[in-house]
Length: 317
Ligand code: C5P
Image (cartoon, rainbow, N blue to C red; front, side):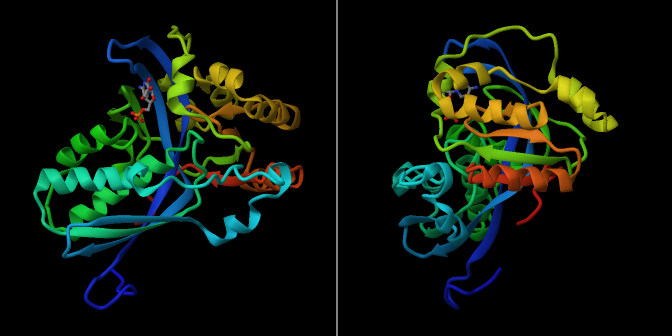
């Protein structure tokens, strides 16, 4: 706990990680409009910061800003002159998943107090990196502690599921094969530290639109194939096992995604999309290789190219 927002309103500071999907198959379309998934998710080392300050009044306010370093990069490279780009304008607070998650927790727990939340964003939005879901899960953890609710993991997970399919994953952010809508998690033991280059093209993608264009299909590989390749440290097997069934519809919707994937294939011979896009990634041969490739891509105008690694748990709280 740190008290830098006032002595009588102690604030807690939380780090909220992004995720990538190393495998994403869609075995079936469901009657409720969602798609049945089999996906392997792992957290990666790019974080938003969430500052949670409980208040005696019932109001919940969420203020949201891009971190200072990111603001300096906006409007350059491939985004020159654009209002959007990898760091688009942020939505009003009622559309923010943090606000929705906290309202739900406040109503269900019957607590009289509220909160002020400040979000400092670094995870690109509409990117398939789960930034908003991660922020929402972290807000639930912060509120459970600050409001002294004592809710169990299971209770929080059920509420998180109502907020969004990916939100339960971020309560622990440990590598997991997720099925159902994404909310049924089977933890898997895979080592962290896999070096990656992650790039968000200038335009983002709407999750719902990408899913709408995606038909179900059966695959010859499965998420366990990725898990076993990671456990053995077998990079060539890993490369063959990576899959994302949402990639073809995303390429259909976004020229940015197809251009980025073509660039990555030209430079390193491979490229994969995360979640419903628009971010794509490549597995680096080493951290040094990944850092150099990220720098080269930034120099070519792909401003949101960064070196990250996978983690095997929520790294920082
Ligand atoms: O659950 P969430 O609100 O994150 O999902 C956003 C949208 O993505 C849904 O409205 C749905 O259109 C699509 N989706 C889906 N199947 C899933 C997860 C999401 O069709 N398993």
